[in-house]
Length: 315
Image (cartoon, rainbow, N blue to C red; front, side, top):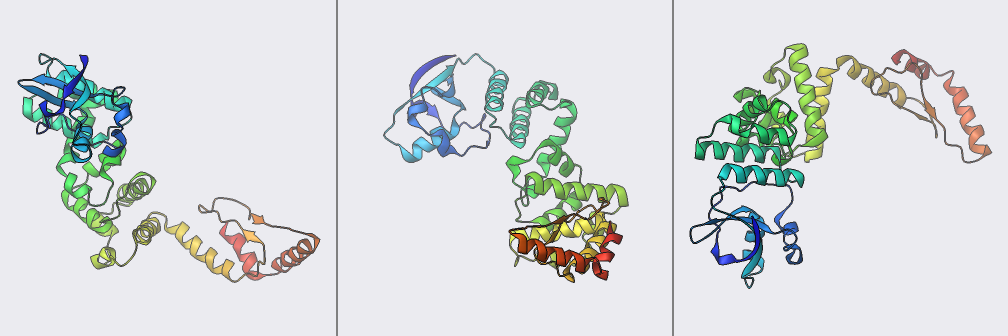
């Protein structure tokens, strides 16, 4: 490997063997002054070079800077195997925290097919990514790839973690398609997707319900696109919570009914979403002695209010 300035027109832009999607948009990679410190990677081939790392930089140059004819590059000799180059490319992206897990799965599948490689060849890459059981991870992630076109309908595909992909991969095809129909267009990831997955998993395992049982309403209810994504997500999340926590749902409904009937003034009652606390928490905001006296009167009246008394039955 050596640092060289090479002609851009000697680079084969059609060879995408090493291409992977990553987190950072191409524009952030395209800072000409930084190229000597972060050169692209290429390999010598007959009559030119193959890109190993830096696809988006080359694409961006072609679109925005046609006058640029040369580029700093780390050049690898043609006697290094594609698998060894892949390992180095993967390690580079992992160290930069710039490699989605699904992208790793995609390029591993591509190499396995193109070079007829044994699964064992890729386990080291999964370990580098932090997956403790590479054999199991490989099996799960390759299965997830078969459903990638369905999964991307409702998720931010390149931000999915192993736990999320693992759950989605184990769903039957008809279950995953139904879930995609329900969540279509929400582009879920992170805490929101994890909440939905956790609720679904607990309902299925704890109550033995199928996906059809869970979303038993007419499908048009869930496919309604009139609502904003935020409203639609909240409606689905609340529906799952009611099934998963029926007692808490009943408590919350009764709690809301009682608190609406109270004359609290500036006093606030702190909700306990799990109803596990054994006392009510009241918050008083006192600006002066007059407001202190006023809130003292309200507290005194609350002590004789039947609705306030009934709140203690909820804790």
